[in-house]
Length: 350
Image (cartoon, rainbow, N blue to C red):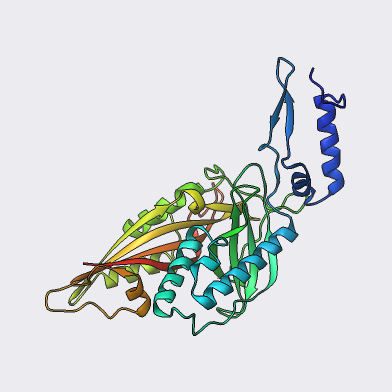
């Protein structure tokens, strides 16, 4: 059987590693990973050789101190970019759906006010709580639940922070704003870490990886996958009313976003379901009848528009949703969309 240079057997190495992790206490798994460069699991093959598996150990995605610093770093970068209307100032702190929305907003702001944002006021967070899952492998991520000085009083801002490797910085990928009473309680393990759900989690009514496509399909055709609400049945009804008006027609196309930093993430809730964050994109084509004009467009829409606007204008949006995905087998299997944040990312005239 193989031994290390100090003469320890693989079984002894495992025992030493586990003892060190227990002594470090809550969050110690991650601190141990930082010291060693990678938490390793040693196993012995039939031939007696030691095999190292660096991505199989379940560890917290971050310490609570690291999560707090990630939120602070994001806030600083976001405020600098918002003040200057300069996408480059927070490009390394946002990604995914939030990055697409934020980037388009800053591009439009830059074109309309190249000297900076005349309406700037800094975003401030307070009373931050962190739901940090313990998981193996990459990417890793956590949820920050915080109050803010903007939006409705009593609302909570939920931001998902993610990174793809130990060398990456934490970036905010999802944002939803909820009433405080709508924020679910998350399950925790014995050490206080949140429980993540997998993309194909069989314990949920709808696998998180399928939610983006399911939502796009629902917005087009309806159905029973999603519970009635502002972001589901009421939004479909509004789009139906706007689809055809005198002199103007609107067409809607919704598409899933599921790869890379648009991949869904979720945490197990106390009731056995999960809060899942997922993204979609949609297009709205406005076509004016002959002899009529399209509705007046805002300065931001004009700033993001390419091509000549004659009889039509196609608007592109990226949207991110936070949804309660119930446990499979419950009485009500419909997914509830709690919040939706979207932003215009492109426009094209025709």
